[in-house]
Image (cartoon, helix red, strand yellow):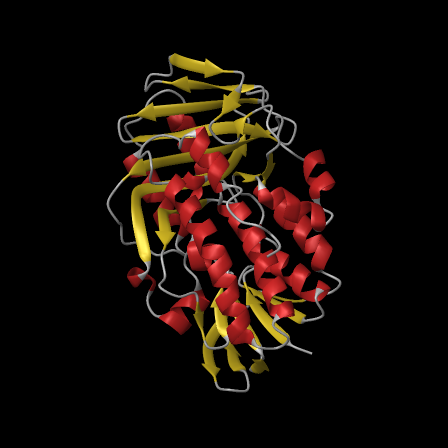
Length: 369
């Protein structure tokens, strides 16, 4: 039975574990965090990814926990409303569409729930080294004893450890999109009720929306910048960067920045994409953001992760043990889909992509074929 180590327990990793088990392979997931990560922004399941969710039997559960926004307001730097809509929001698109917007932790929690009984999870650990030959991949962990797997798949995000170990430093594959964004949870100090607020002040701004029955806020704040050097594990240093860059903003931003220091789920990173000439090296390949990150600006990262996991597992099953053929077919099917979705983040810098482009991108692949 083929053993597969997956690095990363966000969306792509557990989704891949689900499909590998369905096809008779044996998945193991290693995740640096001590448990499924809480928090995160609202994310979208769109187009063909809805078909994947239905085949996983998670579509109805996702619909039950979807966000329920009534609309949004757009504010200037002083907090004056300059536009409002009850037909669409920046985070989810048309409110009467078929797409589903959920909180990230609701989707990842559901995927973990669906796979916990059939997948070995190694929480609180990470891959330290990889050595492959014609028979398998020997994996050294930071904590666990070394083990050998038939295949290794990096589903560990923009700063993928697997990609760095197998393909080289991430700087060679990263395309910076000129922005940094922070996401964190705060008390509903704005008293928002199923309503989003977006603010833009020069090169800085963000979006704020309520969650959990309007009891809390998910705060997204960011600024335009060339690449910055900082420690991705030093959260207080990242908080200081955000506070300094947004320190001159008005309206309620000072209160939100104050709440930021108490947020247990603070996240900060560049808006960036990953572009690789090939997604595979021998017995190692990549899925989701690790291989073809489109950035949150595309609104398609979650859908790419779900669809990529489905296609990769299907090709491994169809190849009857020939991983080279499976990886080649996976990339041939997924690359045009990934590239079209990456284009959503770059076709209209500073603003949302056109609805026509979104509609084309989210369905630009056939699940079976």
